[in-house]
Image (cartoon, rainbow, N blue to C red):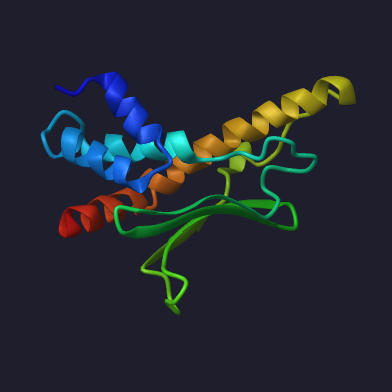
Length: 158
């Protein structure tokens, strides 16, 4: 009998065979919803840069792996002052991605409100930027239809 701790260890594993086992043991049997499994998986494997001197939205790839046959990439970039978070599902051999989307922060979240003290603002800015990043990840997956696309593709192939 499988337990939640075994689910967590399978999800957090670096071996793709463990991710598939988590899918078959927990999703296929109805213990977990497929979208919950995808969110748990991405939460365990998104890698924020540990030692960052610049913005979290400087060009960076947070996730680039094949998940259940889907070559998935989550990345950030910026255009001037615009922060952009993107997701694409494509093989390197493909000319056009099977799915691709990019989002920007909501207008009310585009700017960090400074206290004017760099000693305070530096740590606050990093926390604000991480919160913004995870808020944008949620919007990227749910509002753009990316999660629905991934669920559809996985169900079709497994």
